[in-house]
Image (cartoon, rainbow, N blue to C red):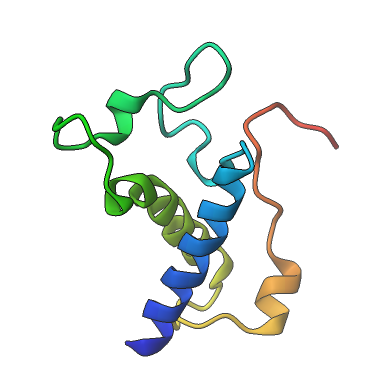
Length: 99
Protein backbone atom coordinates (compact mmCIF):
# COMPACT_ATOMS: atom_id res chain seq x y z
CA UNK A 1 0.00 0.00 0.00
CA UNK A 2 1.31 3.40 -0.91
CA UNK A 3 -0.10 5.00 2.25
CA UNK A 4 1.68 2.57 4.54
CA UNK A 5 4.94 2.92 2.64
CA UNK A 6 4.70 6.70 2.87
CA UNK A 7 3.92 6.50 6.59
CA UNK A 8 6.93 4.24 7.17
CA UNK A 9 9.13 6.65 5.21
CA UNK A 10 7.91 9.62 7.26
CA UNK A 11 8.45 7.73 10.52
CA UNK A 12 11.91 6.58 9.44
CA UNK A 13 12.94 10.04 8.28
CA UNK A 14 11.65 11.61 11.50
CA UNK A 15 13.35 9.00 13.64
CA UNK A 16 16.61 9.48 11.78
CA UNK A 17 16.43 13.24 12.23
CA UNK A 18 15.79 12.82 15.94
CA UNK A 19 18.55 10.21 16.25
CA UNK A 20 21.03 12.49 14.54
CA UNK A 21 20.24 15.12 17.17
CA UNK A 22 21.37 12.69 19.86
CA UNK A 23 17.96 11.45 20.99
CA UNK A 24 16.17 8.31 19.80
CA UNK A 25 12.74 8.19 21.43
CA UNK A 26 11.50 5.36 19.21
CA UNK A 27 14.33 3.13 20.36
CA UNK A 28 14.11 3.78 24.09
CA UNK A 29 14.18 0.52 25.95
CA UNK A 30 14.56 -1.50 22.76
CA UNK A 31 18.35 -1.44 22.60
CA UNK A 32 21.20 -1.55 25.07
CA UNK A 33 22.65 1.81 26.02
CA UNK A 34 26.28 2.73 26.48
CA UNK A 35 27.76 4.97 29.20
CA UNK A 36 26.48 8.19 27.57
CA UNK A 37 23.12 6.76 26.63
CA UNK A 38 24.24 5.89 23.09
CA UNK A 39 22.83 2.78 21.47
CA UNK A 40 25.32 -0.08 21.61
CA UNK A 41 26.75 -0.67 18.13
CA UNK A 42 26.51 -4.44 18.51
CA UNK A 43 22.79 -4.16 19.12
CA UNK A 44 22.04 -2.48 15.80
CA UNK A 45 24.59 -4.43 13.73
CA UNK A 46 22.01 -7.19 13.24
CA UNK A 47 24.13 -9.43 11.01
CA UNK A 48 27.41 -8.88 12.88
CA UNK A 49 29.40 -7.65 9.88
CA UNK A 50 30.87 -4.67 11.81
CA UNK A 51 28.95 -2.08 9.78
CA UNK A 52 25.43 -0.74 10.24
CA UNK A 53 23.26 -0.36 7.18
CA UNK A 54 20.42 2.10 6.94
CA UNK A 55 17.95 -0.78 7.30
CA UNK A 56 19.68 -2.02 10.47
CA UNK A 57 19.75 1.49 11.90
CA UNK A 58 16.07 2.16 11.18
CA UNK A 59 14.68 -1.28 12.10
CA UNK A 60 14.09 -0.64 15.83
CA UNK A 61 12.57 2.77 15.12
CA UNK A 62 10.28 1.37 12.43
CA UNK A 63 9.20 -1.42 14.76
CA UNK A 64 8.39 1.06 17.50
CA UNK A 65 6.60 3.33 15.01
CA UNK A 66 4.52 0.42 13.72
CA UNK A 67 3.55 -0.50 17.28
CA UNK A 68 2.65 3.13 18.03
CA UNK A 69 0.57 3.39 14.85
CA UNK A 70 -1.44 0.34 15.91
CA UNK A 71 -2.14 1.92 19.30
CA UNK A 72 -3.30 5.19 17.74
CA UNK A 73 -5.38 3.48 15.00
CA UNK A 74 -8.32 2.88 17.33
CA UNK A 75 -10.58 1.21 14.78
CA UNK A 76 -7.78 -0.80 13.16
CA UNK A 77 -8.57 0.34 9.62
CA UNK A 78 -4.94 1.10 8.74
CA UNK A 79 -5.35 4.87 8.52
CA UNK A 80 -5.30 7.62 11.13
CA UNK A 81 -7.97 10.26 11.39
CA UNK A 82 -7.52 13.66 12.99
CA UNK A 83 -9.69 12.46 15.88
CA UNK A 84 -7.51 9.39 16.46
CA UNK A 85 -4.36 11.52 16.46
CA UNK A 86 -5.85 14.11 18.80
CA UNK A 87 -7.05 11.48 21.29
CA UNK A 88 -3.88 9.37 21.15
CA UNK A 89 -2.12 8.81 24.46
CA UNK A 90 1.28 10.48 24.70
CA UNK A 91 4.13 7.98 24.30
CA UNK A 92 6.22 7.18 27.34
CA UNK A 93 9.80 8.37 27.14
CA UNK A 94 10.99 5.63 29.49
CA UNK A 95 12.05 8.14 32.11
CA UNK A 96 9.28 7.72 34.63
CA UNK A 97 5.87 9.29 34.86
CA UNK A 98 5.92 13.09 34.74
CA UNK A 99 2.19 13.81 35.16
